[in-house]
Each structure stands twice: as C-alpha cells, then as structure tokens.
Length: 290
Figure 1 (spheres, rainbow, N blue to C red):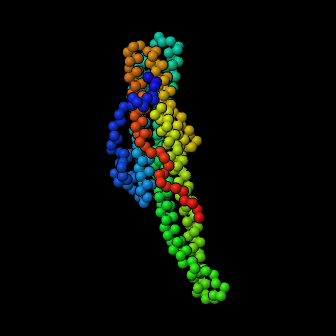
Figure 2: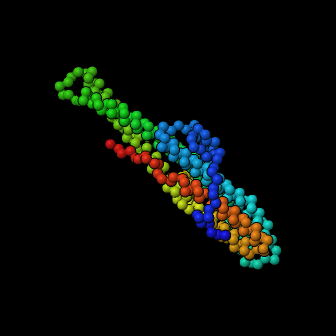
Figure 3: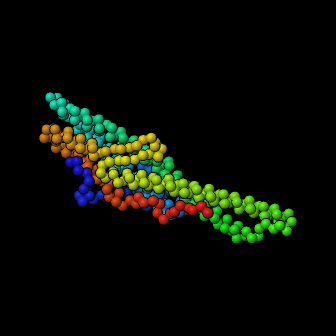
C-alpha cells in the first residue's frame, strides 16, 4: 500500500483538455489565473516556454485538487468514522498521529498550491515579459547604434576644424552614441537578470518534478521565501496504512481502497513530468556585454 513508485505499472493518463493551451489565444485557464491572450511575445521561443510553464501549473493544480478531494471526501470521513470505544492505547496513538498528519497535510497542500500559483501569475509571467521586451529592445538599440557606428568617421575630432556647426553636430552625435551604448548595456543587464531568474525558477520546477511522483513536494516560493515546503504524501500513506491494518476487516477493506485512491492520485502526474521540458529557456543565451 505504501509503494508509490513503480513506473511500469502506472495507469495511462488521459489527455488533458479544456484549460491546457497550445497557443496563447485559446487559454481559458482558471488555474493560471490570467488571460494569457493579453500578453504579447515577439519571440516564439519565449512564448513557447510560457505556454509549457502555464500548462504545467494547470496540470499541477488538477493534481493537487484531486489529492485534496480524496483526502477531504474519503480519507477524512474514514478517520472520523473510526470507533474509538474499547480500543488499545497503541491504536489511539496511531489514530491521533494520522489525524494530526492529515490536518497538516491538507493545510500545507492548499498553501503550496496558492504560493506556486502566485509565483507564476505575479512574478514568472512578468519575468517572461521582461525577457521578451528587453531582447527586442536590445535588437532595436543595436540596429540604431550600428547605424551611428557606420557614420562615425564623419564625426571624428579634427584639430584643424573650427566650424561651429560641425562641432555642435559632432557633440550631438557623441551624446546620442554614448546614450545608446548606456541603454544597450542596461537592457542587456535586465535581460541577463531575467534570464537568470527564470532559469532559477526552472531549477525549482525540476526539483519539484523529480520528487513529486514519489509523493513528496519540495518547493521554496518566490514571494514567501521564508517558507520551505517539504510535504510528504508518502509518509501520510504509510501512517494511514498502519492505522488501517489495526482496524476490523470491513474498515480495513475500506481503508485499502482509500489508500489506493491516494496512490493513484499521486501517480497521475507521472506522464506529464516525463513530457514536460524542464530545461532552461531553450536556444536563448545571455547577452555578452561589449
């Protein structure tokens, strides 16, 4: 009952429909929380990564919702219906342990889900927008500064040139050139910062995925960084299994069905984690400052 990781026996997962998106224009996600068709991306690769992350959050929402529903609707009812008359001290201790773990588990799962949605909606999407806009701005500034660079010979200092208009024109040229260079450097720095921020988030997701199909959740929120989620559904199932084995035959059978439901709920994320690309922003590189 406590064996959670057996990839060869995982059930086939149906294709998710409705809220998952293949394009920005058709997003109706209530999990991601934002109307994604309001966000414009000039870079298709950044847009593609945003869609992948959005679909991951949606699937994760469904996964956690399903686990919570099983816990609240089935497991809680089972625990509350256990008769506590004429029971052993050992049984009562196990009962209290399971009840305490259950209450904390549901609370932590809800809190985790709220935090990861907040991170994506209010921070990660902003990072992606900044990455896209700064990249486009860097390209535009580079084109403009390259144009000035080609005409640089026309504005070189000349010790024998006393024409005030040409001197003024030269001064304006260099002012504009240096201003563009400053803007270019600042834009590159913003792009590189957002690039690093997003890769750090991808690492968080990668760690999350590597453990979640084992029934464990490890995550440190962006906004609530003082929190450090370490949630173990597996530990709960193990403790729940001990309690079930101490009940009578009828209750034991019901408990085994509930434990199986929890196990299956945990396994249902496995197919998605195999197909989700957790690599850094593909084909994009940091801008090297010149």
